[in-house]
Length: 221
Length: 313
Image (tube, rainbow over all chains, first blue to last red; front, side, top):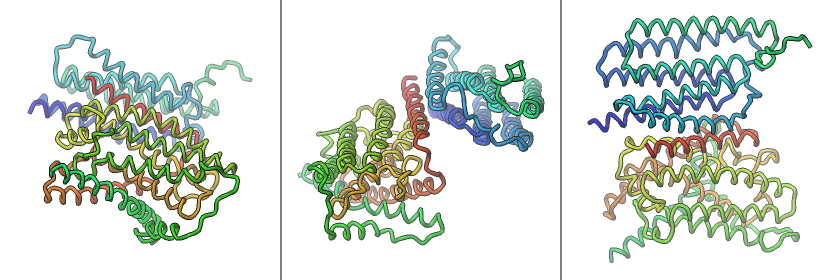
């Protein structure tokens, strides 16, 4: 029974990794949002599995909140805010590292995170073994997306991946921090998305571009 | 006596692959036509096409050398030899002692090499164009193919197809998460190897988009029939590998008549379903620009790399 349980944990972690790769490999904003939505649905499933394994009912509520907020509300908000933007603002045409190289680099980051987790002596636990490397990999990939992409929109998506990774990290290590804190984090994320979307709307109005590189120019030339 | 029976069954497996290959092409074409709201030709149309081509005369340019004339035969021989190593509805093949999965890939590469040479040999600009595109795609596909095959080989213990498929039919899917990644990688690669849509449009005759078609553009008559037939044999071999490695349920592991019949019927069902799935996928994507194809192959390489990482957990 135990081995089957561990297999289910590993398989769901693998599916979560595939979902994360969907964001790295695509260049359109709508594709990212769809990949993020898919990733969030998988994440809520993973959270429910953690809830089932540990038997703590509060985790189910966190899973439901993940499903509602991350896979419905946040994509809706981002779609609503960006509906007036020009289409060329939504495409990542010129990242610092090309898409195909970044896919390979993300695979290496996954390998790195598995390696790192094996170096850290944890009190071994099935959930920790299965999900901690995945959450670490998500964190690294989100960081990489954040650094690599030029447009503000894709940086927001990178931030969201990092947040998903952190959520899974906390969930796997602590088996659910108290529900109050979880709700606080969810509201935080929602408000953060609202503020950043207003910000990027203003940026696009003022600078006629969402390229981060151009924001560094002080002179008007 | 038992040995004799397994050899006969092995030969029947090869015959099944050779005979059913055009049917699979027909199923894919029919499904594509239905998704585009056309009625489409009968699923037996590829057989009629082959018969018609065999009856026709051949025209060969006087600028060509022996390579052009030998290529269809070499291609067909290489791919048919590869068919001997593929377990179809029995989980092993008696000819598996001679060669493994790497030999199958090598034989495909031999056929492809001569096809590219033939494309260059006719000295038309089209042929050279198709050959250079094919070289670019195949040079990128090969490492990805090897990586994903290594994942499967490490998991199931060996590249010999008989042991590999016997092991996969005896084990469940769940304990090996790396197999999911290998399946994704191998699926992308098979789309590329068989010239399916994001890589190459098999139905086109527009010079900007065709890859495989340009190389066989100068062929006619029997040679064209051989080239088309060997292409569809290659396709059915790769699809068979895919379903037998990743969804081996129902494959017969003994030579009893009842299990063999079940294995054969499930094989027909699975390969038709897989063909229909590929056809639906083809209808939903457009052909990618040639220089975006490395992106897709990079995804295949990355997923296979993650598979290898998961192997060593």
